Length: 573
Image (cartoon, rainbow, N blue to C red; front, side, top):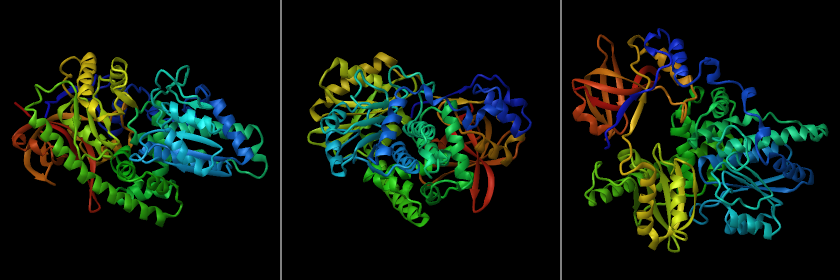
């Protein structure tokens, strides 16, 4: 494992002088750029104006015309949690706004791959749509949109992925990252783009008298639970706009005002919806939802989010939970095989190339992205994990590290080696691509060169960004509760992490890979700590150590107590 450096976040406010949880939160907010604690989670009125979204007027006009004509709207979503929540949001929202016919199609990862391809358009013909609306995909679907146009089906693209040099010839495109779009929040998830589109459509329908004929204008804020789940699941940056969307969604989940599917996903994961946080959404609800798209078809996940029957939602959630357990088993096997591949190359953390391309003949393409993420975390290198996709093709899931824009790296390969890559797309931190099996070795060499051009020969040492030592008097349950609910925390607005010296009182391994400790600060009370997947640190867990940790709540058999969640343990030399 690559050594980790603990680096302190520059302090604009000193947390050491905090005496109460409220004072601590104020200091933590200030160190994240918020001088007014009220700005940590402002209300919906503070959302960025939808008027700045390029293409929104044309998109709204298309939808309004279809509503008035009673047209059939077909939602074509992605097979991840962002796509599933965005698809469910589109279906629920359009029906609430009065659309006569709304259906959805989530293409199988295994049969069709990602995006609106010509094959997906052909499959959609059986539903006879009057308008195709993509969700969380479409910006790279040049051929698919062209095929739909040939068949006389207009396409409305809603997406947030980075566009290529050419845009599809769609009837309208709503994407904050497309050229000439002045929308200030470039980090909207796909589900966030759909929410803005629905809000603009409602405003247009209200202005044009749609709701004067006995129709009721829906409160779209009631659908923010879906927006919160999809936004957190897609690990987009929680800028001010996304924090508003997530916080408002979390409030509804905690109050029980959310769809039965989200409640059921949390319940089967053993999480309390009344205390839901971004951690609950990102690490418990989202993986179970994603399991459908990884192992089977995401339509099961969308149905979980669409049903209004709590019993049916719980039944589907249990099925998704079973798929997630199976996914974890497959992931473990693939990760072990990936580690053997690296061992066979006689490499270690000092001599690894700046990027890793791994391939297993029997790897599951639905789980390759998670394996890439696990190997990235261990070796601190950008990783692409490839799996067989049939017809002589490989599909790769890429995961990056801070400082490397992985889509740009793949784009550099594509530009320098035309024809090597069949198709690709993605973000700075994650991407996907398809190439011919015989091109893997050439791609591996070209990709390492592209990464080296951005990072050099050796990626910088991984870091944990710490807020500094937590005052001993604040290592309490009240503080842990305040930190849990003080977010929403996530990418770009990191959950508070602290570091400091502790004395190890007890140390053992639990669950095969997890490090369980009983520690104490100097002159402080003992407290439990757990380091998930840090079992290899057991030999260092003796005497005085330096811990990087988060303060959280341990709820065991109804007894709530503070607990440290370890990010790293280092011998205090």
